[in-house]
Length: 227
Ligand SMILES: NC(=O)c1ccc[n+]([C@@H]2O[C@H](COP(=O)([O-])OP(=O)(O)OC[C@H]3O[C@@H](n4cnc5c(N)ncnc54)[C@H](OP(=O)(O)O)[C@@H]3O)[C@@H](O)[C@H]2O)c1
Image 1 (spheres, rainbow, N blue to C red):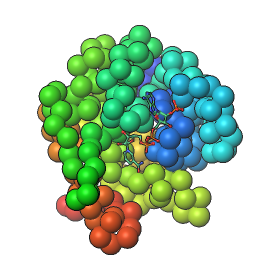
Image 2: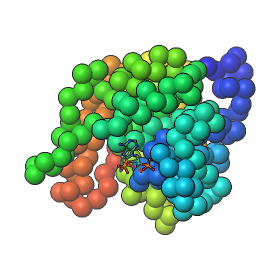
Image 3: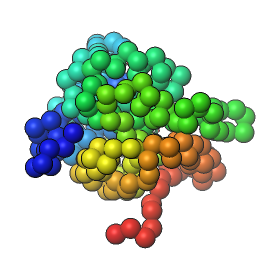
Image 4: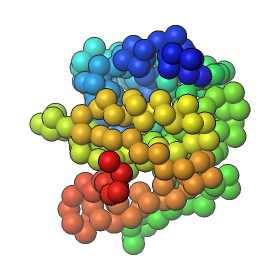
């Protein structure tokens, strides 16, 4: 994990390569744009490398695209930006490429019906805990669950003002993810608890979606009392 000089995988923070599995979706492209703008090397992953390549060209900022496995293998930190429905099988397939790496899970297990969004029951407690259960040799961290893909991708916005709740069991990993988030203009990474508390972070997204629908906005979170 982090060495005594605070480096991760023998690299300084801004030299890290960030891979985004499912990077051709709205959330993956949006996160890719903000991370590349912050100075990181970003690789978008897809089931189809041609699609990843087009998504990367769309994002710009030197972002590249490839298949999910190559993306995970080449990255230092891997973000899972996949649909909940394919989360388990995708994480299992990527496992061999994620050993000893920090994995950021932003997946929200949600259902939708005529009353709007609602949190789904996840036997492991959360998508993040499900990933950690599979990725026994990785450090899984929950982050970016509440930030809107629309705001992330809006190139007219110089910054996206939001606090990003960061949760997980490994302090070095959550610290690094907070530092990474702090490099994105407008964002602040806030430690929000251990893995067992990720379920309500994911579920809270259903409340934000309800706010979005009522107030026709892209609601986010700001935490008070922390300077
Ligand atoms: N959208 C938001 O505002 C937002 C905000 C916060 C968190 N999130 C979370 O971020 C995740 C991604 O959101 P999104 O809106 O970007 O989702 P999405 O567009 O539905 O999916 C992202 C990518 O996943 C891949 N994918 C789709 N079906 C798949 C399958 N069966 N197996 C493997 N890969 C598959 C697709 O890429 P390829 O076809 O290129 O493989 C797709 O472009 C979700 O879990 C969501 O809860 C989203």
